Image (cartoon, rainbow, N blue to C red; front, side, top):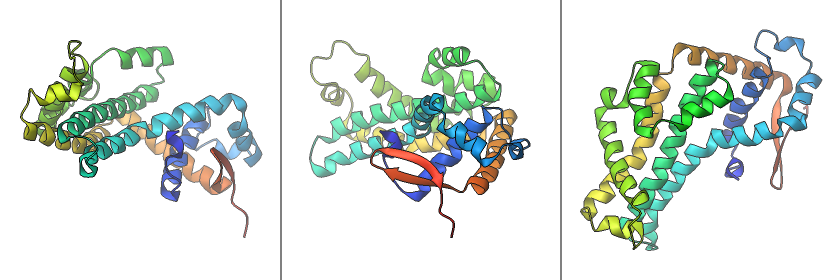
Length: 255
């Protein structure tokens, strides 16, 4: 499970600081009224079996695009181990990184839609309709006044090149050989590898761009979640107790 891909304190701190305040906020608890809830009240919220689906779904959303990007980077390195050809590794890296970018962009839109209290059904409808290119250009401009294509044309060019290679591999129903071998015969070898390496690196840069153009209501919600976490973390002194494949929230032992 992606949630348990690392046990580093830094990762777990990042995970809890993202999950816990969101859970509290969407239960109607904010930095202003949090003091009205006892520690026991808060613990009961976390232990409620009805919330187990939240922990699972939100933790996957919270980590999926970063985890996929790591897989894309590793895929490019498979050639160093002589497991597959450079061309196949490049196309595979592009496909995985494209999926990572889709998740990253969807996370951005989810943040924007949730800040406006959009119903879940409408939120999913808006996510599943437009293409990734539209979400980075026209739809993004309509939502924020910004567009990757207009604001950062160099990144857009990298994305567009990778999209072309990815789509010809994934959507061509007539490929009889492996998709990567077929693609390798259509483009110069060096170009495929260069595009793959540039695209994998660009996903994190696109994420930085998206974070920089969050609408004001999303920024306000983000600030509120940070305030909730500071209060909750100080009060409950969260610790992670790892046991097999389970992660439980507990109290750090008092000194």
